[in-house]
Length: 220
Image 1 (cartoon, rainbow, N blue to C red):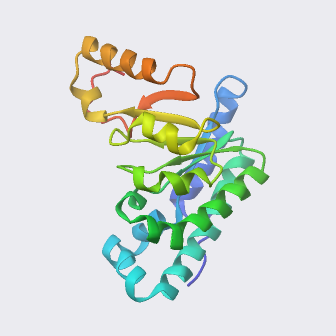
Image 2: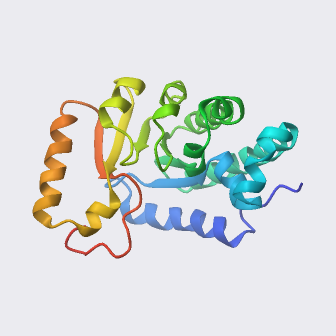
């Protein structure tokens, strides 16, 4: 299987050039984040979710070969964005919330550790985002040394703090559908409640996942 060239692919090249463009605008004022896909998410995008998950049970060698290629590309893509001035790299791997702890530890965890260590070696911070409920994965994630871990609305902030410890920054976790539909008063009440629960902890307030496109502008 050939390794894709990140500067020849329109999608990755656009993100790399975009990072350089925005760094010229925000340099010194706002932290600029880059983004890559985690190995399992990227593999599922390439060949399909079922086509990737079923071989975990019947063809682990194939799974390992595909994931290793995804790690190579992820490293190159991360480095290119860092060279353009990104201050941190976010890693998205939504599909990981759909697998069990044992499968995650066997196929994903060590590759995350390799990717996280590599990005840190380039002098920037890392952020992990996995959509959905990842409470069963938190003990494993704790050992991965991410600087920031996003938690979706299905994850309890107190549970995340208990499992991840005090050093990591937890980011989240308001339900994006609630943000879309709530009144400003309801949203303020929800935000204040969340901030009270996370007081004096390393915490970044945000939606648990992407803000929905139909969210009223005044809510944002």
